[in-house]
Image (cartoon, rainbow, N blue to C red; front, side, top):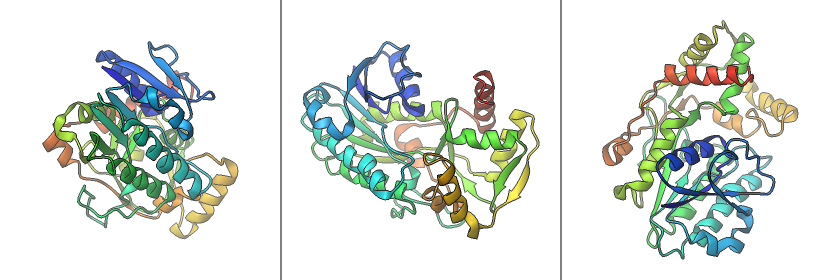
Amino acid sequence: MKALVTGAPGFIGSYLVETLLKRGYQVTCLVRKTSNLRWIEHLDVRYLTCDLADIESCSDAVRNFQYIFHLAGATKALCEKDFQRANAECTEKLVRAAAGATGLERFVYLSSLAAVGPGEPGRTVSEDSPPMPVSAYGRSKLCGERAVLSYKDSMPVTILRPPAVYGPRDTDFFMMFKMIKKGFFPYWGKCYYSLLYVEDLVRGIILAAEKKDATGGTFFLSDGSIYTNEQITAEIAAALGAKAIKVRVPRALLPIVGFLGQKIDKRGIINGDRVNDFRYSNWTCDASKAKDELGFHSQITLREGIKWTADWYRIHRWL
């Protein structure tokens, strides 16, 4: 089985590549000349060096795969145009390039809960919820979904929408670990989240690719539980053996926090676009469709996943 993985050098992509290899896939990683290959350079993979923006030049190569896993995209950008270019326009170019493949068994697009947006207080979003993204990132991922679905009558596509994903190698959740290790965490009121450990997500991605029932479908994935920000913080603190105090941040000040965060680190998790998400308190999704139709079940509890992640950060001297 020949698979092409975009975003392979990244946090989620590198785990997917490792797991595909263990399952006997022949894996090719679509990479740029500037890609950091530290998580995959030791693996027995092939490389297709091409920027997604110029994927038309590699159309013949793209059409040689049975499975295409499209994970590449921008989670941080300086403006909405950059998000649209990376997450919508490049996705449309890739799916168009793949459309001529005769042996393609599945094109999997990794979208995000952000493409639908937050739920109303006390309600989880599902595949039937009307998409109402509240950030430039979310809007760009929704446009990417629509680009993929426009080809569903001519090629086998599947869209997956995970919530926040955590685990070793992740740099976004790492910021929370780092703050809690230092003894504080920002708090702007009780919030609710769905989560998924990276290895569970990878299992879900492969399951969705191999299950015929997933063709043409869109699925939320999560570990099935809902957590408050206080519960998540408590688990991280316990794993680190730390005590952290709340630093209360009024919601009205979040735009200022985002502005300052972007000034400090233009590519960091705290930026003007991300605070649009922080204004909402209910980022939860219902993954029962994936459970019922695909047989998806998470295997890692929050406590296990947080502990393993904390241990990895310590071993690799990130903390």
